[in-house]
Length: 72
Image (cartoon, rainbow, N blue to C red; front, side, top):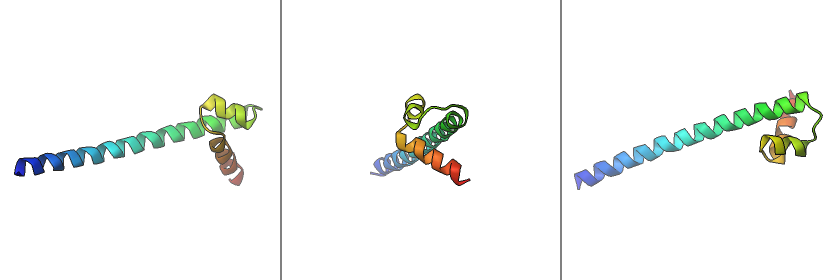
């Protein structure tokens, strides 16, 4: 019974670490996507739909980036 409890604790800890790693990876992707969209907005005359297509992000994400940049 102690062995099973030990395994469960190990698996719980491992799952927690994996979740944190996934979240960090997703945050990194979002930051990279933000920078790419920002560069496209500043350096091209593409419309929002074309930028979303090129950056492989949603139209809403492009509009969010645009709104953040105009608010600054």
